[in-house]
Amino acid sequence: MKPAKTIGLFSTLTLLACSAQASVTVYEGYDYAAGSLTSSNNGGSGWDGAYYFAGSAGEPTVSTVIAGSLDNDAYNLSSEGNYISVAGNGLYTRTLDNSINISSGTTTMYFSYLMEATSTTTTGNNFNYLSMNVDGGQAGLLTGLRYFGAGGTPDLRLTSAVGGGGVSYGDALAFNTTYFIVGRLNYDGTNLTILSSAFDTSAPASTEPLIWDTEASRLASEYGVGAVIDQLRVRAGSDGGLLFDELRMGTTYESVAVPEPSQSGLLFGLVGALVLFSRRFKG
Image (cartoon, one colour):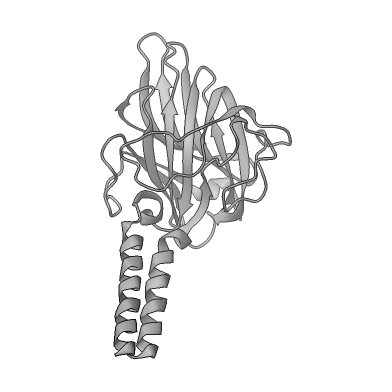
C-alpha cells in the first residue's frame, strides 16, 4: 500500500471515529464530588458558566450530587461522574454556550437524559422536567415525567410540552424506575415542536423513529422576533423529587441515543490498516 493511500485511510478512519462525539454539542455527566450542587460546579461541555438558581443569581436549590450512576438497561452510552438528586420544588438553571435558533430558517436538535421520579405522593399534580428556556427564562420546551396524584393512586407519564402551547402524554410509567428519555426539538420555520420517547429495558432503535411517544408544538412566532433557546433548567415537582443524569444535546439522533461500537470498529480497522501497511512497506 502506498504511503499516500495509507495516510488517506488513516485520516478517514480518524475523522469517522470522532464524528459521533463531534455531533454532541452539550454534555453533563455530573463529574463533581458528592455533596451539594453549587455555583462553583462548572463541568461538562457546551455551557457558558456554572449553575445558578432559576433566572437570577444564587445557589441552586435542593440539588445534591450522589456518587455513582443511574442504572438503566436501555442506556448504552458512556457514563461520566455521578448523578444528582433534586428534592421537591428544587431547581437549577445553566446557560448554553451556543443558543439554539427558533426564529429564522429551520433548526433540528436532539437530546437525551436519564430521569427517575422518586415521589409517590397522592396529592397534587406535579411535573419533573428538563426545560429548554427561551430568551433568558421564558418557558420553552419541556420534557420529563409528570405525575397526577390528586384524589387517588399516583399516575406517572412521560410528558412533552411547549410553554403556553400544546402538551402530550405517553403511556403510564413507574415511580422509582430510571428511564432513558430521548427526544427531538424542531423548528420548521413556523412551528416549534418537541418529541420524546422513554426507554426502560429495551434500547432505542439505531435510527430515528418515525413515531415518538409524545409530541407537542406551538407557533414559534409567539415567542417574539429573534427568539432563541439559551438555557436549560432541571426542576422537581413541588410535592415530588427526581434523580437526573447523563444529559446530552446533539445535531444527530445517533449522537444522543446510539452507543458507539462503530468507533471501536473503526479504530480496530485503523490499527489493521497500519499493520498491513507496515508489513508491505517492510517487504
